[in-house]
Length: 155
Image (cartoon, rainbow, N blue to C red; front, side, top):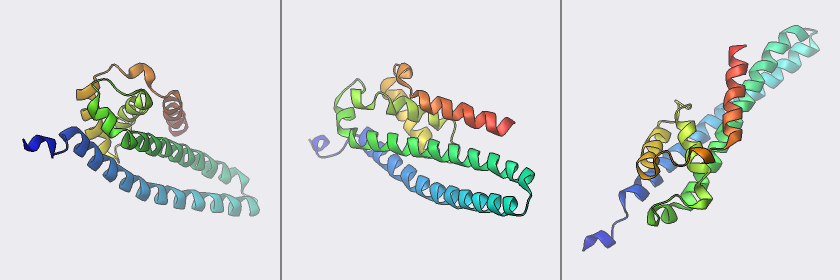
């Protein structure tokens, strides 16, 4: 009888994980913006001092920071999409068309962002509900950004 008054576990767990992830993302974005600003200023100082060779290293670091910021921004957008369609996700056994890109992209990101542990919880929830049936809908931009990040870090 009380079941109708309570929200299902899937919705409440998703909401809390999304809220915590968004809070973490805000802190991460502030930190990354500060690092980017520092790197830009440092590059300008090096170039004005005639040390252009040293500025190349800072430029590489800036590219890595900008790429990671883009990845976090995409993750935040996917979280917003899922958040706005949670009730639809709960009522349907299949993933709604609006979320077919967001769900697998967040599952992919969960394995790559160790600083967002709530994404792993979301990945578990989505895996239990949808399995691996959404892999073909994975956002290609997320994969490309991840590969670009790996290439910049390795070199």
